[in-house]
Image 1 (cartoon, rainbow, N blue to C red):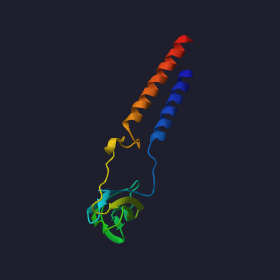
Image 2: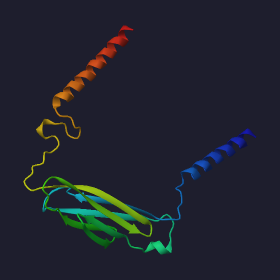
Image 3: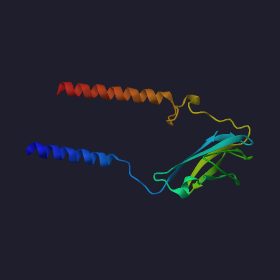
Image 4: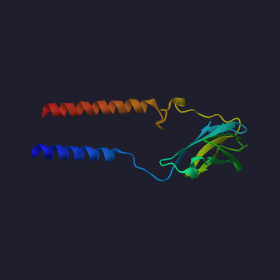
Length: 172
């Protein structure tokens, strides 16, 4: 009797795990999209390329949504462009600016599955401005740290702390 109960419990646990790991069903499709801009830092008059990609994932087939197209609306600096398709590529020209300016590029994909808006900030520089790259001038790239000496001092403090902990544990 114990063997039968153990087999039944094992079967029930396996069935629960199988049902619990199954993907959930949805009656509505999903729309996922992405927006990239290359380059994101441009000089006045320079051209940049905005690429929008969208995928409509249908979890349950519906005749009304199966053939619907994906519509795009992209706007940059007051200029709006529209189109259809899973991939939408547009080129925009940066305007003349008196000083470094951040302008927003917006894109919105729409289909029967819903809408998917995205925004990207584009930095427009006036002509003749030199941009300092991360890591230039002795700074630590992507950290905000001003000098290599701070990195060396930090490593030295960590080593000193490790030595102090080791000595205190060996004396105890």
